[in-house]
Length: 230
Ligand code: CTP
Ligand code: MG
Image (cartoon, rainbow, N blue to C red; front, side):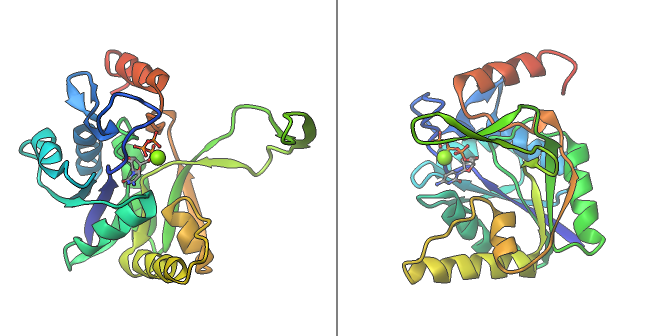
């Protein structure tokens, strides 16, 4: 079985606010995208497609250096960027992971666990962690309207794993819905698969697979690479 990964890295990183694509931000001397690709390869991924902001493909290639990855231009939103990556997958890829460049410190064990679960026959697999904070529902004015029972809630990370046909079908359906002017509600690939009626299974995620979103997250990533974490 050939394991491929699509790395959506085409976001602009508005919340990080560096004025350049987030995937090109540097942690411990290495870009987020290079770290994300290294983690995937260490976890058993054989071929990688990186989706870059249109116009930044060369900068992305430079950041990847000698790593073996195909770089393609992305789209205005993440779903579109992953769809662009799907088109560039090698024909022999049968297990496909989708992994945010922004989750650059995801341990290889998580990658392996996702791959193994897809290999075992699960069509859609997500790594999850427990929700730590107490959750409350609020109204528009910020007033608490209810308690959310945390039992049975999970925070979903990437890489998310799929058999190729499932991921293709999920994105084909999302593309059709979009073309028909309908809303695509799902915010991740497993959500799109779920919309198809595919059962999504979970494997243990890891706190180090957190998504670098804000300057605080970047500082946390920097602190982690300076310690025992990677
Ligand atoms: N992504 C993408 N194409 C887009 C938007 C996002 O490939 N049009 C990717 C990002 O590069 C990132 C992942 O999806 O690796 C998760 O998105 P997010 O954390 O929201 O990153 P950005 O969109 O770059 O950040 P922001 O929303 O703050 O601008
Ligand atoms: Mg975004």
